[in-house]
Length: 382
Ligand code: MG
Image (cartoon, rainbow, N blue to C red; front, side, top):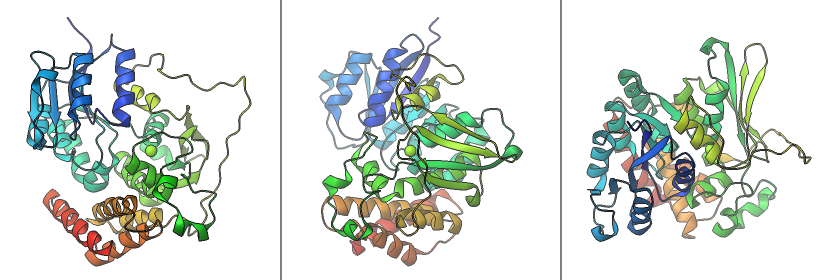
């Protein structure tokens, strides 16, 4: 009998997807790809389907008319959000790895949880927008959510077996992004090309801009609150340029535990897919035969307004984190199109948050409605 873990990969053609495929290929004796989905890029998706003999393939964009001849024989195609939701819940699988950009995967993720599938979560926006609902569904269905975001995966590893009462706080590390050394006065004139040159990580464009503004770290603070059931005051951020210490936890006795590995997503992805087993990794790990340093520094006050706004959204609660996330997406898109400058990204977010306020989110529909409204409001401010 085939005892391999069956994996559905949503977001197969992105940067996390590519690294996940390297992990699955290396551990083909333990992991089997049974479903893949992407936003609209059919050709690379079909190539993955052929290479891994994947029986289920889906595209979020229901208007795409795929050339079914490119798919392996017997492969079933799932069209649009409905099709992918049905795939996530209906295709027999052990783990759904959610790695698509933005909030498109919220419904497929909830459907997979309801069907009892474990979730390996790389898409932080899902918890930012709907953390209360997703975590409650996971509890109700006894489903584990293993974080793939490198910081949260590090914390998950550090907390293994520790009772919650032992934890004082977590410390998320941040590389500081492309402009850590850029004088504040020069930030107004930086270009999208400069923002897209990340010093350590090779990632998609949205998250790379989010690293430069530190909106990404703000999303991660909110994500951590839900994953580990923390008070906002228990989550700190420290600058760590080398991106080797992926995050740390501090226990009540003052001891810290940290997780270290080179800045490659394969370490976190493999941990999540094989958990609780471990196996040799895809990429070379740290080499202590060559000297290197690890630096830590506090955040410069006032430099990272997007992070401050995200923390304010977390404290405000209700729909505020979803409003922050939606406004940030609109603002980043406008920055990439050169419609607004770099320093206007937090302006747009703050004005949108002020305009919408932070009404309570009694239902998921409240959050979804606030998200739609926030996008419309943020577009007017761009
Ligand atoms: Mg991260």
